Structure formats: C-alpha cells, structure tokens
Length: 467
Ligand code: SF4
Ligand code: SF4
Image (cartoon, rainbow, N blue to C red; front, side, top):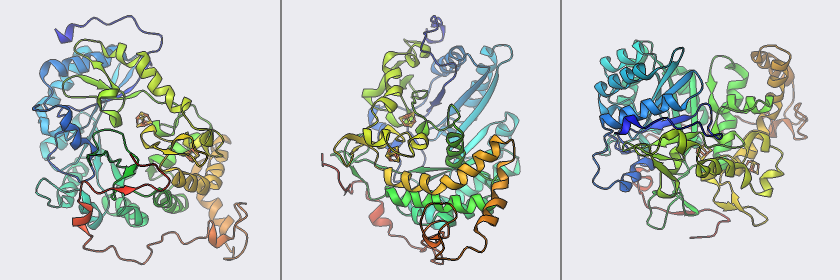
C-alpha cells in the first residue's frame, strides 16, 4: 500500500529541506501557450488521464513531511494547470498535511497557476490557508497575448487579469511570473511598469524562454543545439534585466522585489545560497513529481534519463538522496567549463542552469551556456549598485539608501564624462545610456502571430554545431 511505505533510515546525503513541485494534473492544461515545454511532456504518458489519485496524494504529502528535517515545509503545486484538479482535491491535501504534521511544523502552501479558472471560492480558500500564488503573466495585453493563448488560439489576458483582481480583492499574496521571450524581451520597461503600476505586483520573476528543438521539432527532451524563434536572444535577455534594474535601483528598492535582483544581491553579499537554484553553485534540491508518483531530478528535466523512481515503491527520501540525484546537483559545478570557472562574474552566475548549457565555449569546450552574453552584460551592469547595496547591508544600513547615493553620484555628470562607476566607459555608454531601446516606440497592436505560433520553426544558434 503506497501510503504505508516505512520511513527509511535517513541517508547521509539527504538535504534537511527541499523544494518539490507536484504536478497533480501532470502536464494537462486548459491553455495552449505556444512556448510551453510542459505540453510536450504529455507524450511521456500516453493514454493517461493526468489526474493524481487519492493514494498518490497521500503518499506525496506524507513522504514530503517525513523527508523534511526542517520545521517549515513547502507544499508546492504546479502544472500543467493545477486548478484543473478542483478545490476538493486541495482541501484533502490540506487535511492530509494536518494529519501528518509534526509538532511545531508549519506549512507554506504555494501554487503556480495561469489564473484563468479562479473564482471567488478559490480566492477565499487561498486566503483562508495563506497560499502564496504565482500567476503567469507576460506583460500588457499586446505582449501577453502573443503566446499565452487557449486551446482555440484565443487571447487570455482578460481572464488572467480577472483572476488577479479576485486574488487582490481577498488579499491573497501573489507574485507574477513573466517569461521573457523574443517579443516581450524588447519591452522591458513596458513590462515592468505594467506589472508594478497597473497590476500592482510587488514580487516579480523573469524567466527566460530558451526552447531547444529536437530533430522532431518538439521540446520533449533537453537535446539539440537549435532554439525556436520564440526563444529570447542572449543579449536581449541581459538588456531586458539591466533596463529594469536601472529603473528599480533608482526608485523601487524595498518596495518591489525582483527575484533575480534579490538573488544577485545575496551572491554579492557572499551568502551561502542565492535563493535561486540557477544562480547557486550546485542544485539538485528542486525536484518534480508527476501525477503518477514518478519523481524527476528537476522540473526542467522531466524526461526518462532523469527519472529517479516512483514514490509508490521507493520513499522519496531515498530518491532525493540517491547517488544519481546527488550527482545531478553536483554536476552543475563539476561540469562547468574552464571559460566559466575563470569568469569574473562566476560568483553571481555559476554558469546558470545546466539546461541552457548546450553550446561550446570559444575555446571548444562543451557545456557553455546559451545565455552567457546576457549574463555577462547584466552582472557587469549591476556590479556598481550591487557593491553599494552589499556595503550598506554589511554596515547594517538599509539597502534602500542606494537610491539616494546613486542620485547624488550621477547628478550633473555629462554625457561624455567618464562614468562614475569606474568602468572606464563614457557615461552615455554606461550608466547614462538610454534605458530602453524601444523607448518611445509603441508596442504594436498586431504582432506576427502566425509566424511565432509555428511550433516547429528552427533558428540555428550561432557557433553551435547542428544535431
Ligand atoms: S537543472 Fe536548472 S532549474 Fe533544475 S535545479 Fe538545476 S539549476 Fe535549477
Ligand atoms: S557569465 Fe557566462 S562565462 Fe560567466 S559564469 Fe555565466 S555563463 Fe559562465
């Protein structure tokens, strides 16, 4: 019986806490976002109804609690679209968490959703149980609706915004997850200001779309050295983050939280972890659980080679601490090419995510990150302000003071003066550069949707060998 698997002796490698994303509806979703890598994963389970059953739900909750040594346990739901399971499923999940809760243990309930199926009942439930909700929103209407469409190809912006307003009405805590693609990647300030001023979001995540295409033109496996034309370009992503950072660091520190900036600051402070697996030296504690109990190394590696086992037959504690998973996490550091090991911003980047390391370095070593140029641009750009903020925090002052310091530092500097940050560049080519390449350019109402909806288009990556 699944739920009665005994708790194994704690393996020496077992982490005291971990982050497991459960996919109760597998990859099934009510939408059909063009770049969604989850949708292709349906092919892994042909004929499945993609619904986590009662037995598996209990196994998941119970084993997650048993495997944690720490007192705060994150119970995280993702998809596909988890709300397809219906509210009763989550009511049972909460009851099970209570059933197995150890004295002193508290839960952090989180869910990533597209928000389109939410109603008053969902919002009240989230509020009552202190859920933290992540909502996927790619910017203002014209940008969001380029790729985030439903099964009929219809736009979803209004439905997502309706969901957000419901959460806000009930005071549910939420953050916004924006995927940065080839289209919205050109509009950093429009995206940021929209999320801040019109949505009212104070927590934001910006995740790069890097869609590797296999020979069949689908994204089922992390293979291939070509990317889709929806994928953000490396420097475009770096510029996107840098432009938003410039606005944030001059007026929003302490009131808006951008996950990448928070993680960077932690790395500039030299803290043990950044809070984002991609910017840590090693990873391996962010796993994914399919609806049938299959446990995978990571949400981005839900594919046969990275299947650890099934929690119906092996307790998740053993799978998480297995040599295969430990190696997966350590390979992030151990497989780093020399080019990265000698990089000036390695302490902040750590070669980012292994899923994006599919190129060869300029000196011919494999394992080079597709987004490298963007990270060099971004981390180089923020160095001056990051050092200022880290210095403030070390002196037990408020990082917010950076806003006043920067204003004074840059006041009166002329375009062709050397930049006060010490980069050696002219001010107008460094911190005085125009913040947004698209400034003054209106977002087109009609973007070329027919071209970008093509799931099988290939764009060769410069410098890569072809598969
Ligand atoms: S493979 Fe990438 S996304 Fe997955 S845990 Fe490692 S760094 Fe994070
Ligand atoms: S910026 Fe580029 S070279 Fe430096 S660590 Fe990151 S991926 Fe490697």
